[in-house]
Length: 115
Length: 113
Image (cartoon, rainbow over all chains, first blue to last red; front, side, top):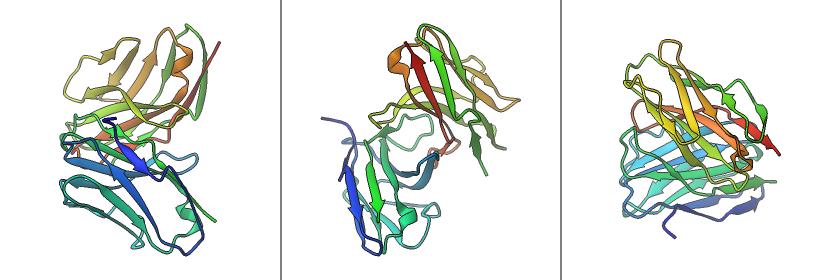
């Protein structure tokens, strides 16, 4: 399977707990993107990585959100002290590089439910 | 700031007929790319078609074509000979950098047998 994978596929957590979402991009893809998709909303851009670097973190909704990428491959999105409004589907996408014409390949997403 | 607007939350079309999904955007940039992505019920988004702003010719991919009106900042998607497998959410997206992509709120398309 050469596509983008995400884990877990579903996560239910209690308010106030920390969660970690994982994204495995397509091998060789240098650009990686995180989005949040809330019910009835479009995709909200969170952050992008070029290699291991995230030049612009302004899309993260609050300081409870952080993301990292190691080895130019796997990325994790961490949400600390989760709130009910964090409930959404979190999508990861990768592309061969950050040229604007490039197709993004999306993972199946992680559905996060905060009780 | 860049914005993308899809004003049709839901649409339906009879199988084999043609449907057009609307998208407008706002930008002050001169070069950019526009995309239509499809998200079937299985949730995985896939690219349908893309258009570079500098190209006047409308992009076409088999049954999918766009009507790109740069002056009007409009980028509609036409689906011809609609098939049941076209049932999905369709998102219009914009980028002028490749760093950040702006998506609309989506149009839910149902193809009726």
